[in-house]
Image (cartoon, rainbow, N blue to C red; front, side, top):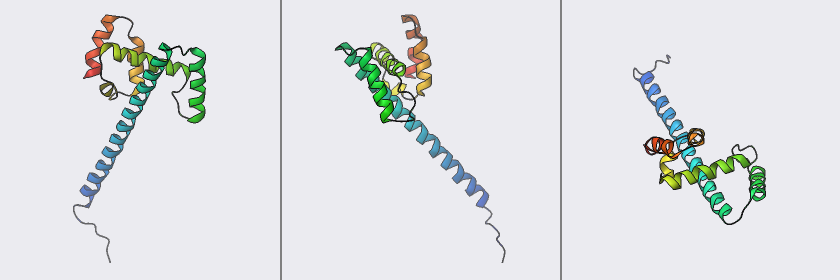
Length: 131
């Protein structure tokens, strides 16, 4: 009794392996997009709350409480909560769709927005962010 494989087995195996890799990649992209949208929602909430009087101590407590609730999840420090607000406010001010920004990894979004110091730079990066 021999274990001879069909002629097209190797190609079929390669095709299925590639399909699984594509699905894994798409899953990661989808998760990233949802997290970016969640971070922007957090930024919006913090922006709105600071306008009605929430101060540094409340944001500090919010950060600690979120970190306690989501143990091991990075990105919920007080500093990052303020970054989320900053990025949300940049988007709102420049009419950039959050769904378009969600196509970028959050770390790239943070880097871009941390570098925007003036209106000219914002105008320069807007086409990149909405592409």
